[in-house]
Amino acid sequence: MPEEVANQRRYKAKKTAKKKGRQPTKKHLYLQNWSLYITNAGEDKLPAKAVSIVYRLRWYIEIVFKSWKSYHGLDQVRGEREERIECFIYGRLIMIVIMSFLFGSIKRHVWNTRRREASLLKVIGHFQVKAEKALTVIANRTDFASFLHSEFFEACRLCLMDSRKRLSTAQKLRLANVA
Image (cartoon, rainbow, N blue to C red; front, side, top):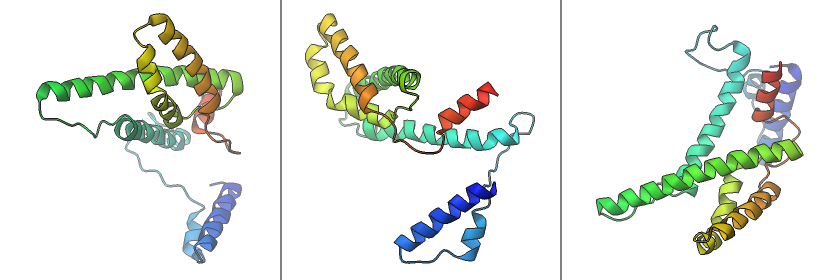
């Protein structure tokens, strides 16, 4: 790691240890100089500079699976009849596809208008809160389109990732594509 990054890591390690009433060990502070990535991809397929970026993308994949399980309730299948279970799973998968399309559009719009990242989990939570209203207007195409339009912009306003000083993985990937 560059010395600046290692120093930031050491500062955070000391701060965290202090909160817990401890002192970080010399070994722990020394290890802040390193990031170790293990891969079976050859240098020709995955250059060393890209490994850390690809590794960070893994976090996005974890968030997607968490949303499927925790927010979309794929772990809550109830009933014994095969038809009921199939309906439940198909309904949830349809909801996941719709949320994926909505989130992609929200993410693009927020980036293009504000240069900020949208949060997948916040978007899902936003639309879960609005689910009852959506069900009341879904039968009328005009009302439902109006509902989606207004909630799209509301989600763009409310569902932003927290601001931070360092670049997000998505921003780093955009920069890597430009270079």
